[in-house]
Figure (cartoon, rainbow, N blue to C red):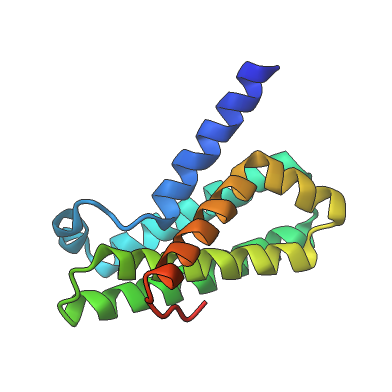
Length: 150
């Protein structure tokens, strides 16, 4: 059972990394056409919706809301990241703050339409650990006197 839970956690971490971590090879991503990037985004969203549906037994309405939440937040996140990049920002902490902001928004939206049982299960699947990591980064930025907009 522990092995199964560890595998679920690893799968969730890998999927979240694919969805929400700034690509290490920005040059490779720039080589993709906008259509290819959009296709990859929707494939990742579909995979995440499928994962959450299996994990939480989402109904069709919840699947729709998850899809819309991810689509809206990922597109907004990508626009902000692109803006930072085109402005010449090289501070990786700023990029991470943008990612964290949109992950917080996703979690907030999820909490509003998951049942309490689904929400607890979602948090136990690795989301709670990610939330705590975001909170630690936010606290560190505040201690260092860095203003955050979260």
